[in-house]
Amino acid sequence: MPVILGLRTFLAVAVVTLGTLVSLLMNGDAQTALVVLVSGIAGVLVASGGAEDAPPAAIPSPPPPAPQQDFPIAAVIEAIAEPLLVIANHHVEAANSGARELLGQHILGEDVRVAIRHPAAAERLMDPQDGVNGRPIHLVGLGTREQRWEMRIRNLDDGRRVVHLINRTGSYAAERMRVDFVANASHELRTPLASLLGYVETLSEDAGDDPETRARFLKIMFGEARRMQRLIEDLISLSRIEAEKYRAPNQSIELGALIGQVCDELAGSPRAADLVTQIADVPPVRGDAAQLSQLLHNVIGNAMKYGREGSPVTISLVPESELMTRLTVTDEGEGIAQQHLPRLTERFYRVDSGRSRSLGGTGLGLAIVKHVVERHRGRLEISSLLGKGTTVNILLPLQPVS
Image (cartoon, rainbow, N blue to C red):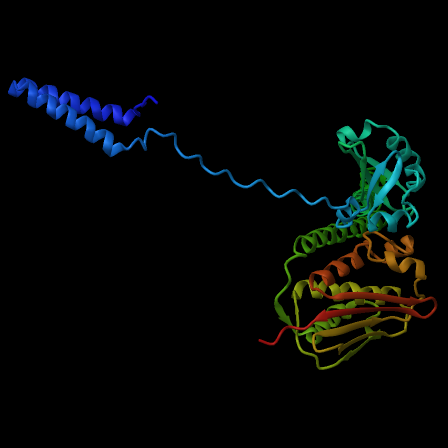
């Protein structure tokens, strides 16, 4: 079997040979040089032992990965909270609990057009190419009339399809509120502005020469300008409170003293004599003094505006628990119908628009109260009985004892 020299062995032999030639040239003794050459080559071969000429040992390859466990698809989609369906041959093969709660427990095995009873959804579900690009479709009225859903379809390699339903009701409601807010704010500002412009135009003509007419018009213009000022101030306050809603206030506020201060500030109003306070000895609350003062002005002011003249407006402050205190403001007015109560804290929502505007309301007072309570990590409750009056309860957290 022929011996094949490795690279390093070959280089070593070459070095030995070169050294022998140098020795021969220097000494001139050929016999000695030959002995040196043979001895050197033999030593190199013995030292190497052919080990380096053998092919390197193969590096052991890592063991193959364990085969992935084949989970049932129903178990996989059950871990997803949003409604999810798997469709095979236009029938519901699997559906998670979210889908069954939305569409009904009976949908397994049904035709998908029967399971998702929506004309727009049926058209898309029957199109085999619809799940290629995953274009969403918006479904109105699926589940309940007010709900808005987004449906996405994905095709799987085995021919099955995954239908994903995403609840967009919250974002739709937020967008609707934003649009309504802009429209209402524009209307509320445009109305007094149009009145101001009309009176200015009238005063610039002959009517401005009559002192009595001029004084009457200027009084109306001043009232409209103040109305715009209150609206703009409330809009700024609402924006500021919303911007700070995630930063909890940390001042220590004596709420009883603050209630007394607000009542003193309202002393000049027509119904100031009707205010009745029942203030218990409660620990300080954790809050923002300016925002709590605004909350008190709005809640007490509303009770004074809408309560019957001569009837008491009661303001009480009592401990609720070791962690909370309860502020209650009660009037004996006409009351509010039950269907209006859930919407009272919406911006610009009014039970009686004409009366509210005539009393100087901007439609933002209770919206500001709601956001102040939320920022203080409290709770707001409004109850009312027609012919009896309205009660506003506000729970606020106490300042922790350090």
